[in-house]
Amino acid sequence: MVCIMKKIVMALLVVAAALIGQQTAQQRQQAVPVIMDPNDYDVVKDFALPYPKAGYAWGSVPGVFVESDDRILLAIRGEIKLPEPLPSGYLGFFGSLRSALNAPETEIRNCLRVIDSTGKILETWSQWDKLFQGTNGPHKIKISPFDPQHRVWVVGETRNVVYVFSNDGKQLLQTLGEENVTADDDKHFGKPQDVAFLPDGSVLVADGLTNARIVKLDKNGKFVMAIGSKGTGPGQFGNVHGVDVDRNNRIYAADRQGKRIEVFDENGKFLAAWPNIRFPNHVFVSDRTQDVWVADNMTAEVLKYDTSGNRTFSWNASGPVPGGFGELHQFSVDSKGNVYTADNIMGRLQKLTPKAGADPKHLIGAGMKLMPKAQ
Image 1 (tube, rainbow, N blue to C red):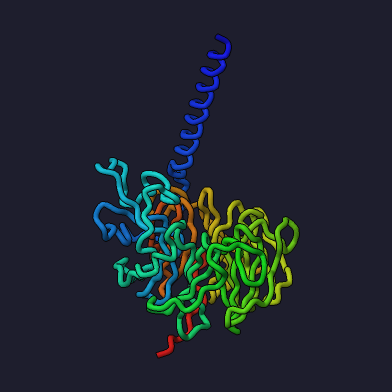
Image 2 (cartoon, helix red, strand yellow):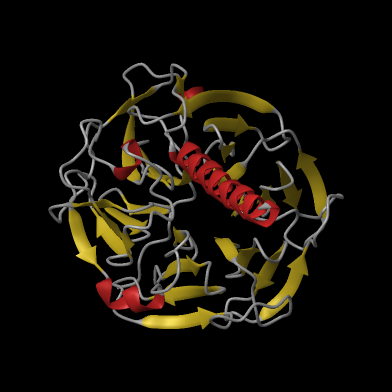
């Protein structure tokens, strides 16, 4: 009898643990609270909606990069099949129901696309979906401002590589790192997260979540040096989720786990740390003003710094409302000051346009202008 009672108690404990785990997962999937501060942007209503394929929505959207005012590159973690019938709370994007990130309904398809300024899809590079099958999709997407070929760099986090495509997407020109191999040496990466570029053609890889360093490569992709290591000291990282460079070749790295931005010179010398950032996801330097903008998340906040590390402006921007974010993962700015945003959690693109009479100090300026494309 005692043995039977023990078995019953153990079974009940297993059921209770499962229910608690399910409740915790559901809580994680709930939309973040709405904490919207007044800001100097209007939001283009239903940008890039409805989704082109009936019955589907954008998957998690981690990457966006403005090549020109009417050519915007996207990195998307596939498509998500919508429930039938649609719940009454559906707002046109999957994140209005629950988190789009790692949603089990995600189908890894049409991960790399090009849209125009209205949200119309111009190109779909579906021939490269095979690179992301069995992964959580691409991570970030960029073009070097110093590259006349306008090659497209796509970070393949899960496979530990960075892909380099021709500008039209027809050719895979280079794969940096070795697919499905993780190592902390001069030929491999460990979940790379982002890339940035120096005027001499050098490439900086934020490497990343398994490793904790910035890898500097020369213009041919050959290893030059590693900047930083795992740790909490000056010049060390918990992990590196974002990287950008200013006009003086200073390197700004988002140490997400370390809750700070760290600054280095182009030779890897540690210069400064800017602490007390909850979850720095993306770092972006506005070229004309040399302001450093940081996407801070959980909940989402947009932070502005000068190059000395003084926080000069910020606004809270959380939630499924227009202009709010679940996780602002990457953003990019066109020459007119329109900001295109990629949201990992909500699974949506947004286009923010400066309000009439907006304070220029409250607007994110464009990054370094790309050099003219070679004909």
